Image (tube, rainbow, N blue to C red; front, side, top):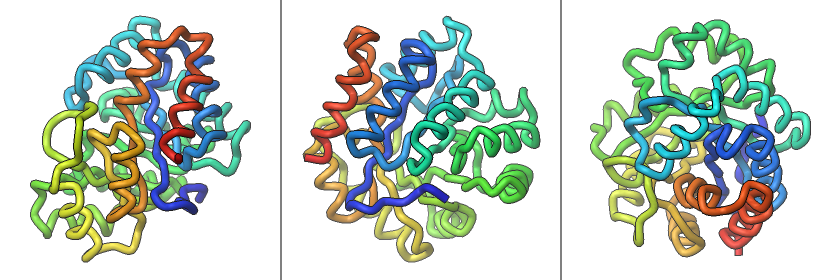
Length: 253
């Protein structure tokens, strides 16, 4: 299991695979790892990403328009794993592309590609029997989202069925950058710690070094997605890897 956070807070970096293209996604992931990312969340582009804000929605649209498929993302994951064997690598997807491939085949291919785990945004723990069985059969870590609105009984189920880390959503709503973190962020972490000793990573709205430092006061890792994806959107493809590398290094500073 390569998912570990040796420095606090750890950094989990989300990328939409295939935006701007698959080769650049690979180079960006490697640059992020080389500049301090502990875990890469490699996002499978989807035509209807309802949990995401406009930044990641646009990235998915661009990647889908270029024909990026789940099998392509698995290929890039394999390249990242070969190049950086010690980095954490999570496949991040909506359920629909996985169902189309088949849960059993997906899990086997994810393991073959070298992924450490899987996060399916719309997979709820109450209906995760088949998913959990295939994750276990292929030594993959299932990562679940924990929301501030979840009652304790649900947080307990999420904590007990997660491996690697638990992803705590800092606020209700969709992904996207924001100017400050809400009080919900620390509260959800405190509640989760009653049920697990796993690392807890906080995401949704974590956008800059100040946010990362604040997250480090109460959680184990920060998840940065929209800020990275927005930087990629605004940067020429040839410069994107270097720009993301500098940004990630700045989060560590």
